[in-house]
Length: 334
Image (spheres, rainbow, N blue to C red):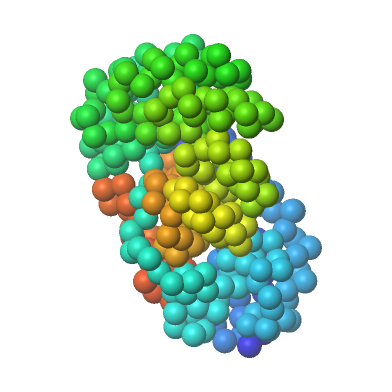
């Protein structure tokens, strides 16, 4: 088998209206399509311009996709090659990562920072769709009011993941807000509340609050440092599939649950890849941050089902998804 063509599609799919009011465009997305002389094709996705992958794409042409080491390549091409290999051997992609431990992966509803009443309205939508957790970008000046209104707009089992992206900055601010938020009984995680250059602050905050403390980390070395500092209850893992798997293994050894954000506001291609990986991670029990539903359309026509706040792990060979080329071409910009 030989790779005959690698096509890159830079696309721009606007966010849904509530998010678009604040972020008309979020970041560049490029899809890669690897085609072979035996009629198989694999898909991957990266969050950058088309130009960033052109050299690597050209280098793949003429190679045997089953003879390449997929993990030695940028992760979008890793995904595409594993997609082809899964189809060639009639197995789902997650088999390349290990034993499957779940057939459904929980996912959070999501909001950018909005006015508190707007976030509450979005929470009501999320709850009606069957989600049970709502991840939101928090700011110190209105997070307490936001969570109060979200609680009023939803049932008591609808929880909130608070992620200020370190905007609370210092330990006194984070500790005060944690105390106020505790009273609502709906905050499921307190992620990256402070600057991340002082893990001792996180250890102290963890002692001061009952809210689960989490850090968003990538490299396994960062996870190891957080575990040694005893400063986290949970961890949000990003990066390549191989990196996430390595970091999750460290967290699992310390009995720390995790969730995964390989793509965030991605399309269903990267979301499906992440779901396959999460299907094999024993401690990936928390709602993930793979959010193709935050855009007005998706390139995946079928194969990645989302129902009641859970993705069903695709069972077909490779990624197990079908791409809607009409959507790809409609939103293609390069």
